[in-house]
Amino acid sequence: MVVDDRLSRVFSALADPIRRDMVARLASGDATVNELAEPYSVTVQAVSKHLKVLEEAGLVTRGREAQRRPVHLEAEVFDLMTKWIERYRREAEQRYRRLDAVLAEMAESGVERGRTDIEGEAS
Amino acid sequence: MTAITHPETTISADPALPVIRITREFDAPREAVFRAHTDPELVVKWLGPRSVTMEVERWDATTGGGYRYLHRRGDEAYGFYGSFHEVRPAERIVQTFTFEGVPDGVCLETMTLEDLGGGRTRLHVVSVFETVEGRDAAMSSGMSYGVTQGYEQLDELLAS
Image (cartoon, rainbow over all chains, first blue to last red; front, side, top):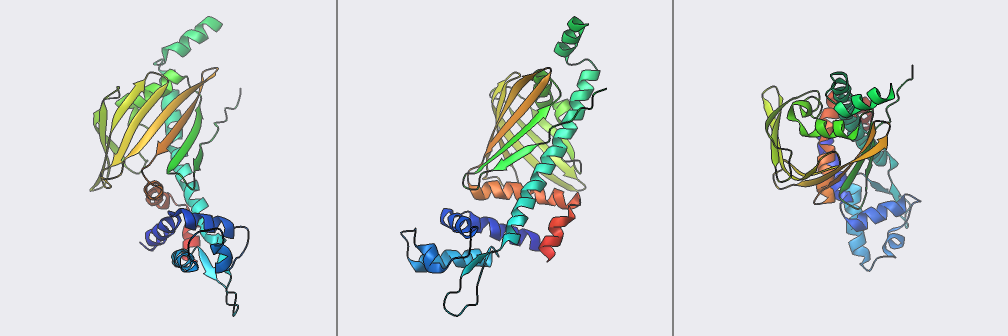
């Protein structure tokens, strides 16, 4: 259940558009809270709250430099997201391979009439 | 003899919109792909994950029709139901999808069959969820299947 908890925290953290935007900006480099707050018409406190959610989800960490404490994106979590989508894709791919097999059976048993006719004309 | 290469499934999940897009080509005409989606005897052969048995309770793939099926694994049963909003032979199927475990969530799926000529078809599926969270929850539920199918990389990552 640890897996589910961590994933659901990541997903709910990314459900907010400001947090998604912050993550996108951090992908190009570390930034301070003030830098992150700049483009938004919300307070630095509000941005700090958003950061806390991202931090708890394991998406970002805070540096230890005395004054700056830059925010750092944990790329590992993104690998996790990418792998998770890849799993979903593989699941769909397996389903469609079964469909390939069903379609092949249909063609063999002549269920699919149109195709047989086309082949008949060609010969 | 020509080796037939099946183009693999492509998938995209928009980070900001609650949408999943899937594309896949099939070495079969549109009529056959359509029939494999609408004839319940064919649907049960491919739709459910291999680890479950699929039991169709109702399957009326016509405009205004509906469906309900169960996935059974041991003593567990998971129900799914929805409506067929529009079923246009060999071209398009628009349907809703609800997992009974999440009864407040509904997904709208539009499937389009594109004729590629030469007896080939490209299937497009656009699934629209109510929220990004709902979409992500639905996608992550695939995790349980993924784990049983043994994709170990992610497990290692999670353990680290």
